[in-house]
Length: 204
Image (cartoon, rainbow, N blue to C red; front, side, top):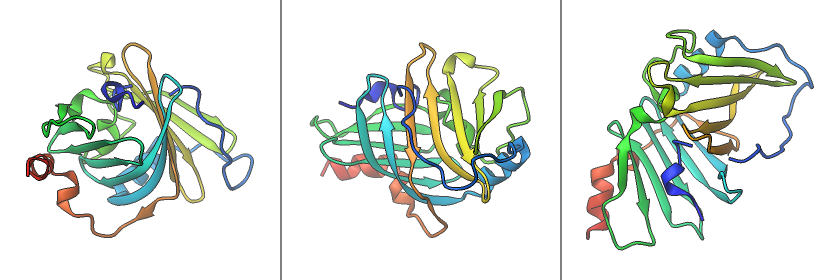
């Protein structure tokens, strides 16, 4: 069962998966990582989510920067998570309620990579930056609100690619999202990220 309340504001140990490429590569700079995220305008990818209780869910993620993201979960999950208009909305398909659970994007570490101009070198945002074989791992948090939690971003190089993130909430609960190959570019409809539109569709 997906822990909806901890999604995006909170996996277990990261799943093991192989990276293509050399066994060792130079650590990516914060500037290179920031430039990659700023250049990521739209993207679609399959994802695997590992929750803090060890349960696993899969689905498709849609990203439209800045500020918009959508997680469509595969059955048997009946959950939809939308990020748009500065809000995170979690729709529970098992309930009869059209209205989602909702809270500000600014209260989640995911806001760090969805903001309009990502600059990981500013504001004492980065609290960890290390190399692990072919991976560069960057841990970031809102320095003004560390209680909101942190996000651990895993990148590979040549070319730079975001492979995984781990969100840890203020209580230490962790949620891991592992990304498949991303299809970048293209036109993603605004309705994919329009929370009031989705509510209207469910009220019909």
